Amino acid sequence: MQPKLAVAVVASLFLASTARAGNPNEILAKAKAAAGGPACDAIHTIRLKAKLSAGGLTGTAMLLQDVLTGRYVERFQLGPASGAEGFDGATAWSQDASGQSRAEEGGDGRLGAIDQAYRSALAYWYPQRWAAQIEDAGEREENGRRFMTLRITPKGGRPFELWIDAATMLIDRTVEKAAIETRTTFVSDYRTVDGVKMPFASRSTNGDPRYDQLVTIDTAVLNVPAEEAAFKVPAPPPPDFSIAGGKTSTAVPFELLNNHIYLDVKLNGKGPYRFMCDTGGVNIITPELARELGVTSEGAFEGRGVGERSEDIGVTKVAKVEIGDATIANQVFAVYPLGSFSTVEGVPQFGLVGYEVFKRFVAKVDYGNGRLTLWLPAAFTYKGTGTVVPFAFNEHIPQVEGSIDGFPGKFDIDTGSRESVTILAPFAEKNHLEDHFGTVVSAMTGWGVGGPARGLLARAKVLKLGGVEVDAPLVDLSQQKKGSFTDPYVAGNVGAGVLKRFDVTFDYGHQRIIFEPNANAARSDTYDRAGMWLNRASDGFEVADVVAGGPAEAADVKVGYRITAIDDTPAEKLSLPAVRERFRTERVGTAVRLTVLAGGERREATLVLRDLVPRS
Image (cartoon, rainbow, N blue to C red; front, top):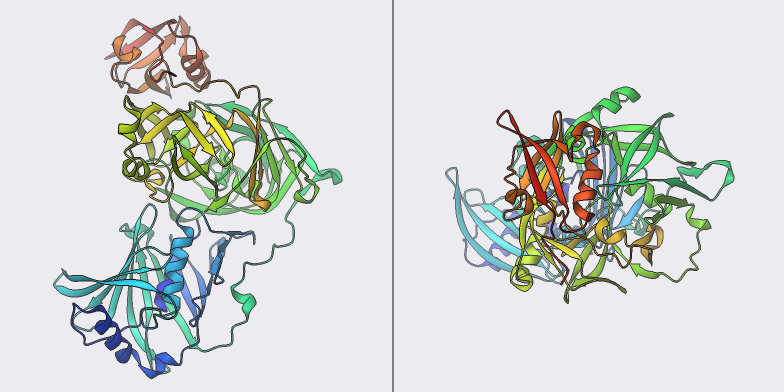
């Protein structure tokens, strides 16, 4: 939810030149001279204050850069949302609206911070400050304008392009490909500050103008004193969480439905409401629940998930969140319509909690007994025999070093995923995993923000997560072209299909996860043995996908059909999670009678369950 401020590049792009394309060093040398020459040499720090506009909201932003080292800090306030991010020369960090901070060392977080530090140091002019590979990317034309482009890859960072208007020789934009999107930042309105040309306006976009971020500089001051502490990871805020009655822990029951954790949550004293619990998920409530609580949704930011579409998300604040005897105050919530999830999950959807809870408490997910225990961090000491695995944060998600069948990579740990292991498309392609696994099954494998997800299902030999080994997990080679499963910096996503073999303790304060095998440890995970994906419909269950060559296809069940009864029990009396569990776990060879509605006519069909992805 935190907007990228676009000012991250504003301070580094005040370039002008009369050079010709072909020689990057010549272009940059003349650019420096045209931008102020000796005046640029005199810059030690840059401080910008700006107006910020994004998602239909307006606010303020501040950027402070230490030009000699590349250290920086950004802060913003935008409607009910606020936050900060920075780089202290060693650690990239972010801070949320409640003052909670984390190091951004997983995924591509550090790569993006290194690029920003490189630009903050003006290192394209001063290579001794930060080494980089700089290449001529050729001339380009767009809307009758001609541009010279440079491709710059800072040491430890990722490539980005610098576009220079050939007519004015001023920088027009940067183009940088992040994990799941390419972001272009246009700069304009050049003014002179202490002899240096600087752009006072920018527009950052991913190509959809609804989500553009606009920055207008109010003041730009060079060489203000900057204390060391300004760039450091902020100290923890005063506690905004507690456990009633002076207790140090609280335990609450949860239901595991569709491999998702559901527990009771009270908001502003109302409820309880059944919420999904996701280790890396932001706080979410539905618009209907927001109205019931009397809170107002503001803005329209872009939300992405496993699906290929993006969705509009508003933001609001909730004064009090209660889980058992645990309380958290003044939480920012995303406001998002979850109606489609109700049909996918088969149970009403009210909202989601996760990261904000796990960040404050030590949390143990006891999959074996369906219980979540929250401890005050100072009161938690682990003395068990489980395996401790360190992790880094990939934004909100804990990420561990691991491997799948010996292919090493970084794996997100995600209680919000129903699957066992999702292998992200870039990692699968890079390592030729479709060839490695051989026989695969194409199927719909999930449904999240942005719609359904498809993948190729196979059986791996072993998954390793730090010192934990999981035998013969089911893997899904994602086929998504957009969304979170296209991240090239992540190998895979580990969900409840694997996690429920353990009781899992998340200690976010010490960035460690503790895995303790439970009664499910030796049980193999299985894929749906009916060979179809069902969603809830008003007149039964809708068939959303049929696996080629699977039992449903053999029974002549097609996409779009309605199943109105199973073994003579009307569908309205059946729980969709229970039906999915039956089709996944009931023994191979079981015959299941379906009453099917197709083209307005009812007929009977019999499918015979079998393993589509057997364990060898």
